[in-house]
Image (cartoon, rainbow, N blue to C red; front, side, top):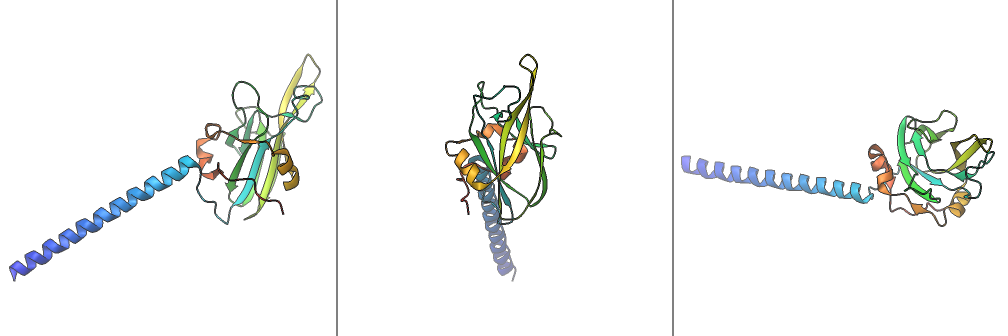
Length: 196
């Protein structure tokens, strides 16, 4: 009896060790897979999320001119108090940058700001619905006179057709311009959503 018990216990121990090893390998593989998806920006969007396209598109001819409201925006986009991204891409201001986010449905208050905090003057309140697409254009407004001039960011909710036309030559914003806590919501390799 004791030999049979010993053989049975040894077999059970080996089975437990094998099972534990498989679980560990499976867990390790899952962690590596999720990490790869985060790095590559290819986490699939939930069907329950809303797609929000943020893009910077302005006129280089009117940027910085007092009274202009179509300048190139190179500040940050916020969702509430959380910075999502920064459109400043290098030393020179670059136009036509875009990024696609998949965000949870519900009320979001987006703003465009040149500061470290969201601007109260350029807010767009949107109630995002699951599976729908939204297009927000960021531009710069200039005020004052030639000697004393200041700029502020502005967000406009635009139609799919307008956004598609204005982003025809847009480049995807670099990953390093996205806030770390917003990375899981970004799609770096998704193409522009189709217009209805």
